[in-house]
Image (cartoon, rainbow, N blue to C red):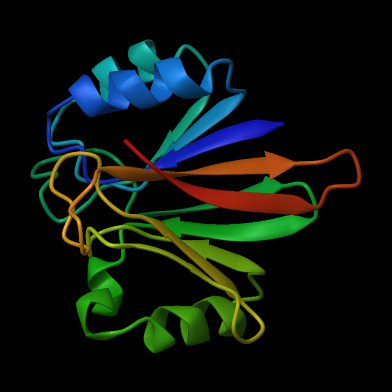
Length: 159
């Protein structure tokens, strides 16, 4: 199963379209918030099941602020991350995920990609498709492949 993980599109979709073209076909997409009212468009664009949560810029959204999903052998916390103050570091969000029995947490908000394998909980942030903040400032996303044994493999990709 191939999953595209994105975040912080902020209503700009050209880079999301490029990522979808480059990674096609995908089986599922996870959007970690700040779609800014474009969640229906994002779902149509993806052409597959989409899990999406509300970010700090999703004003008046009916989206959930968190979701629990199961992929392969993993129980995953999906959230934007702003309620966990991820701009100051990811220790708090990882501790919360661990305390609640999650194997993995996916979050956005920082606009910086990361795959953190330290400790009990794997933390993933795909960065931003529209306003990247890491060195080089290239739009980024993560491709997650779940193999036949339920094991997940990840790669940060850049446009």
